[in-house]
Image 1 (tube, rainbow, N blue to C red):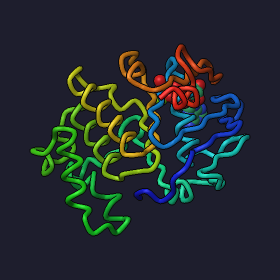
Image 2: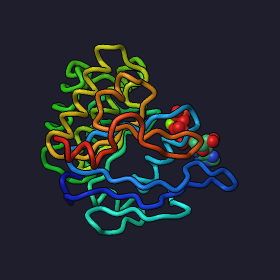
Image 3: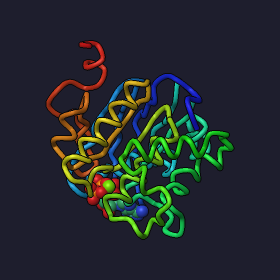
Length: 229
Ligand SMILES: Nc1ncnc2c1ncn2[C@@H]1O[C@H](COP(=O)(O)OP(=O)(O)OP(=O)(O)O)[C@@H](O)[C@H]1O
Ligand SMILES: [Mg+2]
């Protein structure tokens, strides 16, 4: 749940297939502590598929995933290695309150400070007043911020955020990107899939997917960025 392992999250030749559909062509990626990397590309390019593979939710058709040199074979190992996912579509429970949604993974992990962590994460996304409201009473953008809070509350080593600002106004997009940068600053490796060029421009590097094929866009890839700091 928190800071289980430090080191790089590495994808070596990871490929994602759904039957005949090749969603992600072989990609190499190194996500190190302190890095904030954007994954961009048009709808259907393979962003969510790549993040799902990195989170251990989808078994890659080829390639290997590792954390600090240790292979990751599935979701349980990914969780144990501190990999958290903020999924596209949020995956929140409508019958629970905002606070309960954020706290569920923390309670499941038997963290004694689950409630305090959940409250702090909700406050960070500007929803400290909304903790007691049922999810279905919240707007789409508020629900998205609850999903971001749930990811932040995990204090992951690697945070994979799948379009976490897609339903937000400009002020809240800026707030969420600042929170993701703060996650990197405390030592997490953060990957954010986004359609928003402004959000991508705030990242250290941009991995662009086009019909499943990955390339580093514009500026340097992450290794070069790290060297130039
Ligand atoms: N569970 C699935 N079963 C079969 N095909 C899938 C599945 N999930 C995704 N795909 C296909 O894989 C390809 C990549 O989809 P993916 O969701 O990764 O794209 P994306 O870049 O995240 O798109 P968006 O920006 O719309 O979220 C698409 O052709 C999609 O139809
Ligand atoms: Mg997607």
